Amino acid sequence: MSYLSGPLDPHGEPSSRPGRIPHPVHASRPDGGAPWIVTLAVRHPDGRQGTHSFVEWAASHSQAVAAALLRARTSSARDHRRGAPLDGPHTARAELWRGSALSW
Image 1 (cartoon, rainbow, N blue to C red):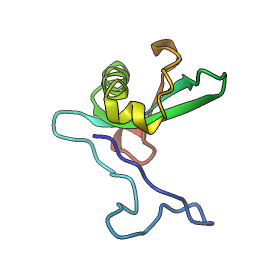
Image 2: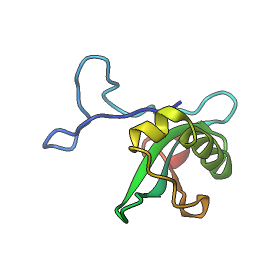
Image 3: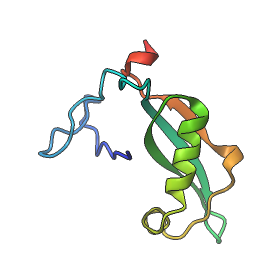
Image 4: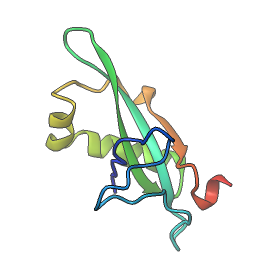
């Protein structure tokens, strides 16, 4: 499951626009999965660099990275980053979503 949290307000709180979850989920799933934020490096052909982040529900770091890499290869993900290729799976960073049960 990927989730874009939207813009932050000046006080650092997530957007409260309709249809948005105002705060991260605070519990893991029964199967042990928890939300991970996975950030992948991208490099445009003209040399510009950036990142593409995904929120993936997974039971481990490696499962979260694998799920994000699969999602990053979809056409909608490539369109979102305007065709920029991934810099390589070795650049993936994953951390538990702050506020999930496993990060306390």
